[in-house]
Length: 130
Image: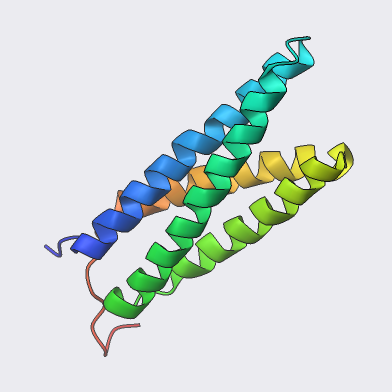
């Protein structure tokens, strides 16, 4: 049975932290929408945390690609981080027509990536295997 390599465990840890952080974002936004205006600060701080973890996950995705010869985690992370970056700036600009639906899609995509990262081992792909 193939085993997950240390770089795979690092990737999993970052995907897990990223998922946990992003799940808090709609909670903070919802509390803000109920009239607790201090929650907007929590939502903004959460956006900084989520974005930072996303970029760390991107670096881990590069390591998985290079060390384990698996490009899918990097490609999926790149898509999520690109969406988060657009969403981050849409939120700063107050473009809620883009910020909210993109946020929903980003949370869903990251949850799917979390499930994918944990459902099977991340061993090194052999040169002959596709």
